Image (cartoon, rainbow, N blue to C red; front, side, top):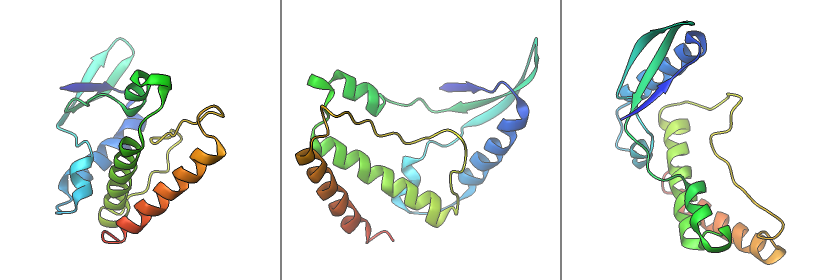
Length: 141
């Protein structure tokens, strides 16, 4: 299990409500399986007050960590396509089925590019991949 200990209870109360809401959304939408659901939560008293603690199933290797393991830090196109496809399906579940939109300060999805990696040719390939994904996503919309 993975524990997320919040510094303040105030900000975590809204997050806890959202996780509880998500757990109750029943759907056979494939994006639901791609969302890490809250297993449990409890309060922990510490020297600086009470903290909410969330219990989650463990995550695997992050895409960024996987990218760091690749030669030259470049992910192969099939990996990028699968990652983007799964992200779009998960977002479709959150926005379309669960009716949730991320409006917080922190970005939960980050794409890293550098001038060395993203040449004009690679940018065109990237745009073709995105176009292909959008076409494939029409069946879920």
